[in-house]
Length: 401
Image (cartoon, rainbow, N blue to C red; front, side, top):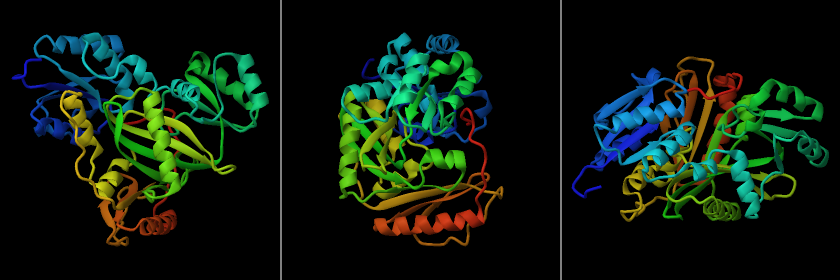
């Protein structure tokens, strides 16, 4: 690309997110294009930062997507293509490979979308993972269930959170689910269920080096809150703790072994109740959901969407430097609410820095210089939310925007 020409970045998202990414790209002097689904035509997009918007039907076949973007490229150069949501990553990688545009290709993206691929690679590298088997050969499934104690988790290989997961307590429970899945069953794996505490590490990486990483602890495991109901919480862990040091090292090994070049990641790990051992669960090349980016911003001043945009625009050609960081602590609490617009005015602690305004949801982002204060408030609020707001809904079989 000639040095004098404005860089054009095409952002693809089937979900309403990434507004700060779009603003940052525009603020860096880029020409910004957004391709999103038709139903989000009137979404909360920063239109002042978008030069042109395109719309597509949901679940557009990748062949048609390639034709549409290639047609758009006839009248304007496209220098970068970015998937703002995890569920667009494979299609965007196919676009990059077809148009020979820099960025993560299909082979590498499988390590950050396909739970089977990422587990197999981690296991090869000696990183502990729960025992697992692909849902392919029935004799292999029988051998697994005979060797690994129940319960097990039947997991979609390319979904997020607890969407589509089933807990299996005996072999007789598995086969009806596989019959129902039919030809889709090979897109699943069967995994050992290990009771434990679940953590996440959110990172910024540049040229294969982890530049920034923060470790957090969920309250109840996400699988439990999504399937059984409850209040979701997450919080920054004390940075000098032994668990944090272990988590950051495993996270670094995971990203190195999976070949992550640059961008942001959200990785999840489990610490077994039985022996205190850490296991790698999954990793995605995206900003974490459930207000995790707001937690990190509140605690450190690092906005992951903004840093991701800087990395994508630079694409290794411009040296990346992390902004100055703070070392406060933060947490988030979110719950489905019985009320369509819950009244949270009775929650008035000074640590509340952001109130979540979302239909049938209640929640806050909290900030304090003291990690114990965050933990204390999340515990107290969780009990109060149960009485004041909590509603439950069945976990979806597929994501909704």
